[in-house]
Length: 295
Ligand SMILES: Nc1ncnc2c1ncn2[C@@H]1O[C@H](COP(=O)(O)OP(=O)(O)OP(=O)(O)O)[C@@H](O)[C@H]1O
Image (cartoon, rainbow, N blue to C red):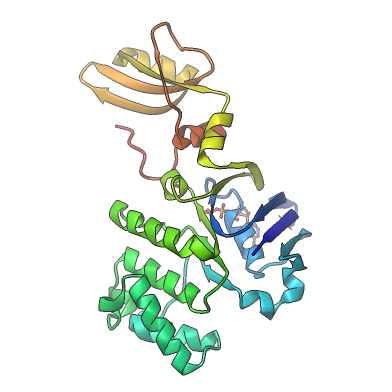
């Protein structure tokens, strides 16, 4: 399975939301990482044939996905950012309903729903109403519906939005497992969602893929170094004005800053190993997601 994007572009009137994106993906997890408005959803909607590119191509095993039409959609599973469900349906009825829309025969649908309930850890919740599920369970039901047709390509738009840290870990593990034999493209603005499970991370900024590679490659390519600086609290405003600072930990009179800079900000500053969070800060000049521990 190979998905190839060739100079993929989408403009809305004079605004370019996706700007000449080119990349090739095959089985495994790809993390589309970027801040709000970077163009992630627009890119994914094109990959799902929901909107047409202004220019450029998307090829699946060498064929244009829009020409493949239903044949391509049969290979595709999609979990949109806001996914619609029927609040009064039970999880099982919801999945059976989506299975019928996807054209699965009732006997096949029954088997697949049972298997997917088990795979997503929802067997015990099968008879619960959708509106009674926790955020994490709802997302897992969303994944289950996207997997009903056993897709070779799975597109997940911000699947971890609103999940608590425990649910996020369970979700990551599930996605990792699912991607063993298919292509999974997952968008997020939270570094830790993709740091350990993505075989490649695509950093998307202002419609472009600014950088792509493994977490290690992205870290190695960052020109700045990371410095841990223990300073007096009174020095914090000046240092944060002067340097990109990824983290500040305060305690008593002192503060520990994590500073990104080519050179040591002052003699004696200790160099630390860079992380993907630092890379995110460097390229986007903002902190990733809602998990960042600025104290
Ligand atoms: N139908 C549209 N008409 C005009 N502009 C649009 C349309 N859809 C998206 N945009 C604009 O394109 C840009 C990229 O939006 P997109 O939703 O793809 O970003 P994103 O990275 O998914 O961000 P978010 O996580 O906030 O959804 C935004 O500035 C958005 O306002």
